Amino acid sequence: MKYLLLICSDENIELTPEEQAEIGPTMDAWLKDVDGRGVRLIGNQLRPVSDATTVRMRGGDVLVADGPFAETKEQIAGFDIIECADLDEAIDVASRHAVARFGSIEVRPFWTE
Amino acid sequence: MTADVGEAVTEAFREEWGRVVAALIGMTGDWDLAEECAQEAFASALKTWPRDGVPRRPGAWLTTAARNRALDRLRRSAAESAKLREVAALAPAGDPGRGDDSGIRDDRLRLMFTCCHPALPLEARVALTLRTLAGLTTAEIARAFLVPEPTMAKRLVRAKNKIRHAGIPYRVPPSHLLPERVGGVLAVLYLLFNEGYAASAGADLVRQGLCAEAIRLARALAGLMPDEPEALGLLALMLLHDSRRAARVDVAGDLVTLEDQDRSRWDRAEIDEGARALDAALRRSHPGPYQLQAAIAACHVTAPDAAATNWAEIALLYRQLGQLAPSPVIELNRAVAVAMAQGPLAGLELVAAIEDSGALSGYYLLPATRADLLRRLGRRTEAAASYRAARDLAATDAERRYLDRRLAETEAPT
Image (cartoon, rainbow over all chains, first blue to last red; front, top):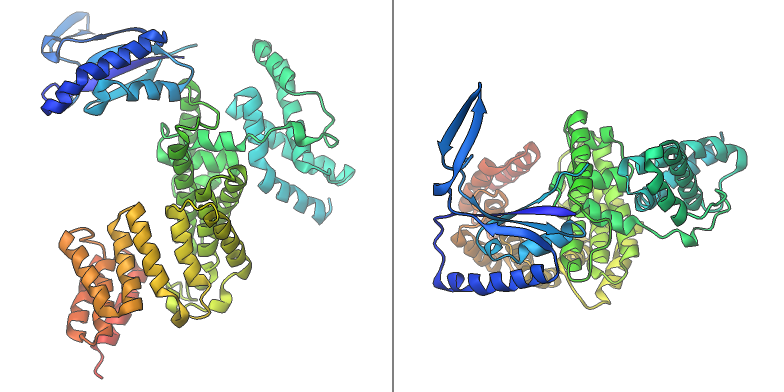
């Protein structure tokens, strides 16, 4: 099954130096694992929401706004698409992502007919 | 139909529903189809058993009948041809009634883990467990949880959809996930039991029936996971609590304290089964919170009268429990046990420590416990003040009536 991992965190969160120092090695290990096993199909980090643009089409007009589609405490900071046997495997992959330690990972199955 | 056959079908329904549904989900992967075919199999039993007699293995008969229904249905739907081949390969053609169920594995354990998966909301875990494992109807579950039937139906549909679409696996979790997931299954069963137990004072038999369902499921779980002492511990805990059900409320519907309960109304058979389950669990030498709570319950129900209760043992068990699962409520219970074993002053010290910690502020049993201890020390003015504080925090009429009685006794002139 294909799942989208939405990597969410508060952009203004202040991490301790220890937490900060952990991120790099944790991510390296995660990427080595998911890419090595072919679990991750694609993924990337995203620029902060200050660089986001939201587009809507209303009554024939294109409405363009600065910022994310919803003002929330946590914002989408990245994404990964993974291929797993089932939700338990997807949860395991998500739980080992560095951001899971201070942010949250939303696991969304793809819509399949 | 004779009453005996009707009885046999009812009995088979209670014992076999979960097994039949679980087996059908295992074969088809389709939860709705599994439930419908199980239902049809039971309906067909009601028709044929009076004529042909009750089969030697009712469970195997029902599973075979339900599987044949599923094959029929899938055959009619051409789009499912791939799935049909799968099912046909899994299920050797058998004659219902003469089939041997040794080849049919018990899928109930997988079903329990799927129903209690942490990715489902807790209320859906409870509802799914009752629907698919215990065979309660949606209407019955809705009544038990005091929600409208369409709400409950929606909850069940949403949960089944999530299982399918999000890929919640239908299997016993691998060993590294097992401790956490077993805990989740036990928690759902205990929640079910407590829903029923709390309803004991009311007139609603559906809610009270939840205790029996929870015990039946815990018994099945303990049988399916013989190496899991906490499953046995939970079964023991439920049985030992349930044994006191009839004595817990008086004719007016008021709660009767353990001390004042008529012990002759306790269910001896349940106490014996509970004690055996607890012994079997403790022999595994791997104590856990359910086993310790069951051991405490056993201290109460095995004492010939309230005065003979081994409070020193209970205090010790609460200390162990508090170390495994620290909680101010456990600490308050320990304070009561210590007061009974060593005297009210020793208990008051522990109560004061809980009050100082600020935990449980707003919980009526904290001032109520202090009031009881003060009353026993003869400090009546302080006791009355604490009873009043407790009364202000009490949530139910039964609790308030109990505290009013105590307050009146405390304030009565000597």
